[in-house]
Length: 443
Image (cartoon, rainbow, N blue to C red; front, side, top):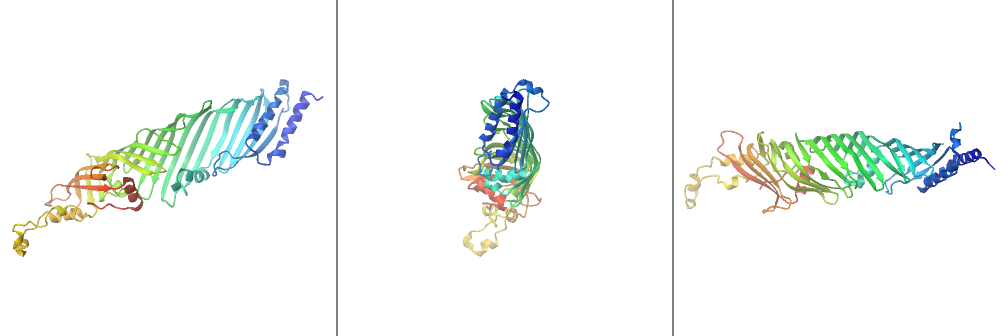
């Protein structure tokens, strides 16, 4: 009969040769579980063996594994090293590699394989490889986007009932996402998150708010900077957005707290707009204005989903009173002059040519034509933008009400009031302006 030491060393030699026997061919998920169960048979090894100068156990297994059941998910190459049997625990060193991903984990687990500790010593993801895989799943428009930066995972915790529990931290530094063909870029991205996860009941939640910052956002039509998003992940894996704001057009847009469903991704948020530069808004949105100076403030509802796209809800914008506003109309013949005569008729029309010859010119007519053709700028006294996507009583999805007077002195025109009306889906109108640079015709 073999003694305890001989039996232990015989098992060590057998496990040490496992890699040459089975580790060179792909293995399914249950193979590592079977391997750990086999190691559990060594629980009978006498405790006195712990004091031996030579290790009681050494071996290695490896294979391939499809972790995620998605066509775009890469295959994982894994390897497990058994380093020692000490303190009545099995000590393992786990390695996993995939294109753009690397992980190293230390595990100490008892002979029953249901209790122990774990530490994620190294976890790295390469956004340059993973974004092209994930982007088309989020939105077809993201296909072709490229990313860069360093993404790191760290964590530690315990094993209960054979399941991992603990804390996981994620960090993305020096990040960027760009889409050359669509002409937009997100630069200076930083992401930090700290989570805990449990198995009974199964849940993830935030230790501290997930924090995302983007230094600059550039597109072919506008730019923004200093985007900040802070979110908590609740037990249902739903992000609760606690804070979201961005600087744009010299002002700021801030979102009220909202929930962000991920499956499917859908956004419904109330926005507060503070001191947005009208010049940038005119360049972005087809307003019927050739140019404008000044700032607006207000609030509106915004929505987005993969199925419906951009949805503009009800809202209102007003002139910021402490800053002068000037604007110039895009050419709209007849907008103002159609409602006034070019000449004043002093004689009855039946007198024929004499009636026109003796009819004096309306001194304000030429000035009105200059305004409606965009030749004369207006100093705005009040401005009000009303967004009604369902349509108001006249069927307008948006209306701009303006009261102004000519910016130049010496004209014969006093205050003028007019309205810019938008009919049709507001989101389509805004997208038309953003993508094609279109301008609305004034009526």
